[in-house]
Length: 65
Image (cartoon, rainbow, N blue to C red; front, side, top):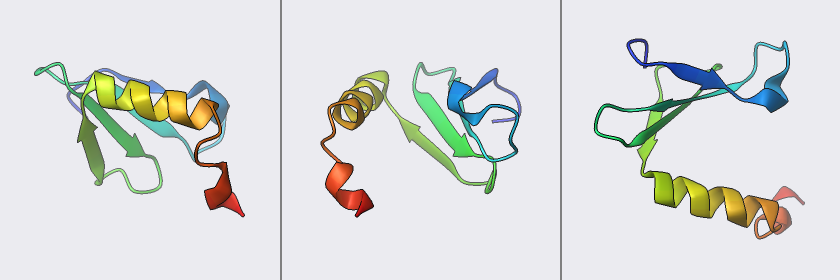
């Protein structure tokens, strides 16, 4: 993702542990975590939107216990 414009999560603050997001040339979305920058996850904007809506709605809360 080095050649793409990245945006750091606003929840990361000034810490080194953060998530970066970039729009790929093919209009896909690329995600990476600063702990393992060589691992990049690719998805579509629609799939990412569905995931974020599910997280906000609490659909995955049971996985944290």
